[in-house]
Image 1 (cartoon, rainbow, N blue to C red):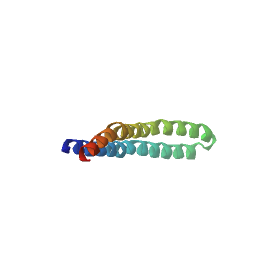
Image 2 (cartoon, helix red, strand yellow):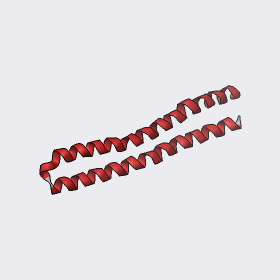
Image 3 (cartoon, helix red, strand yellow):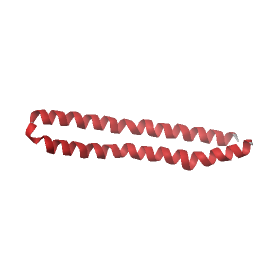
Image 4 (tube, rainbow, N blue to C red):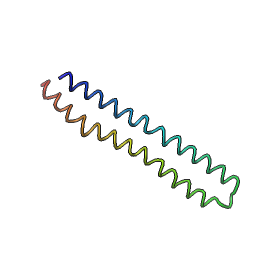
Length: 93
């Protein structure tokens, strides 16, 4: 019974770390891309459309890593945590 509770706690911590650490990379990357795009548009206003298109593409690619960390966190919670929680509840009651 104690092993199941420890496993559930470890899964919860792992899911939290996956989202916490996995959200830092996309946030830094997207901020950097947006800042550089603003600088580029300030230098060449006539190229604004192509710069904006490239910026949005770069941000979408950067955001995919955040989505992967969300998928890992959800898999940890729903496919590993819930069966263990159900087993723990059966043991308790």
